[in-house]
Image 1 (cartoon, rainbow, N blue to C red):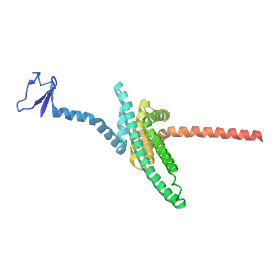
Image 2 (image 1 turned 60 degrees about the vertical axis):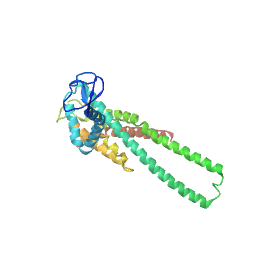
Image 3 (image 1 turned 45 degrees about the vertical axis):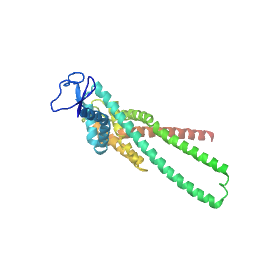
Image 4 (image 1 turned 135 degrees about the vertical axis):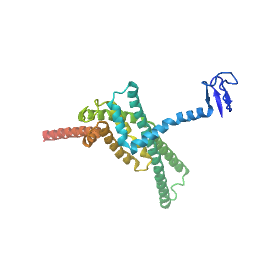
Length: 289
């Protein structure tokens, strides 16, 4: 083992009798040096701590959602400090963006692999069929070369559109989070009575954003082939309901309406537009006849 002098950065071997001064620069070692192994351990801990914190949060949200959202509710029962308010927004956003991006990357890899396997199988079957029907079709080298160029072009376009969706996923997810949180907040302001039955005194946009962001945790299930996407959608809705129930201290019915408020609003507006279109069409037909 050795120590590092903070003044001259020299390694000093540890002895049975601790050194008071650096033998190279005579600087005091009591406050200016750190054991090398302790410094490396601290550096490794600092590097790994964000990953450990993320994994711990992901596990807690997925396996213990009720206690997790209850802890969020306690944060909103006391006035947060400015630092706490910033921390309460950026940590959930970072968690949701990372989780959704990882899920999208897994889905892209699975879709690419499955699509490639299916495409190769179809090409083999098509090649055998064409050889049986017309064995002279691929004798022309020029025609074969053009077919290969088209295949390469299709593969490049497929990769571009698939990988492009993964690349822009953080930006589209951020817009979706902010947009959805706004309507969750509107729904909570309508359905929740602040300060009654244990509800928070102020139904804030921050609380809605936290619910939406942490409800993104099941997106990590994108690593499950075929069933990952629908499973994550169902579990995200359930987490949203649990989050609304615990954070806003409301019943299951109101929590469900809050979690579904953006979708209900969208389908309500779509139904209203379709109804207006049908009425306009009926008036037009009746006027013509």
